[in-house]
Image 1: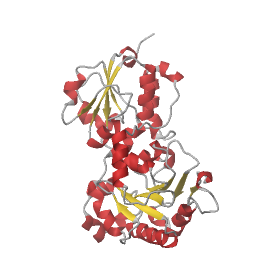
Image 2 (image 1 turned 135 degrees about the vertical axis):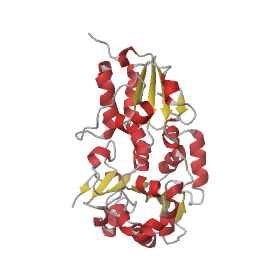
Image 3 (image 1 turned 30 degrees about the horizontal axis):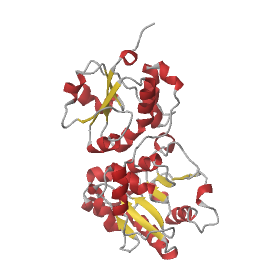
Image 4 (image 1 turned 60 degrees about the horizontal axis):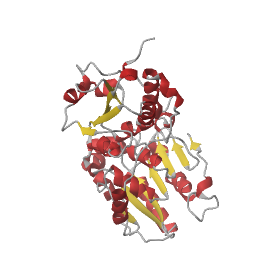
Length: 340
């Protein structure tokens, strides 16, 4: 019987992609790989600061490198097998001429993306089948928790405030970044992105803080999304943390929130990793492939054919169901999907 390169490998190099969500999708498979090869040296090289921050405290990885500091081609020469954590076509420019690369097949639509790297590991390492795929892995360290306490200190302590993390941006906004573009072309904020319109976010926030004074909002996002905060009417119950957290600090901040309201973004997957109640707003993306994983009772998905078809009122009603004084308590909210 032929032994696969991964079965024989003693030293394995993982290649983490640029985007946060794409990297976190692979963490269940990384854990299974470690369980199946407990004595192997499993290292990783990150193509971006985001993926490096995500994997920085992953207990399944021995050594973590940055591609900016350690060229992949030089690193790869020291390893028996090189595994990209994402579809090979998306990282091929970094892996050309490396013979130890094990090809990652295209994603299959029947599975959530988080299961693809796991299934890739099973194809290469059949003995891993005894270890079931689990949830995402993101370890929040003590310093991240201290930092989160500092960042949230303006929110009153105690059981009174109901804190909602609000992530208004998405990868497209972060990548394009120019605020004037969205002032000139507001349609870019609707059907063609993963973000709800800033105007509707503002209407929702103002309605909630007016009718439910205990509600506080924490705005999250990358520094290139900083202009998103300008779209909201100023209010003392809004804390702007856009551009002020790394991945670990973001995870610790989300742990302290009672609800996360977001589109289909990397921070949505971070919220899943730290098991927060969530409302996901999505348009043409498929939540069965890229939505909350694993889907829990405290997750609610509101999906329409285009983000601009999601009304302020239906999101407001969804949020109210999570509030402590709602007739339906937060923990019993079903993972329903509203489609249209």
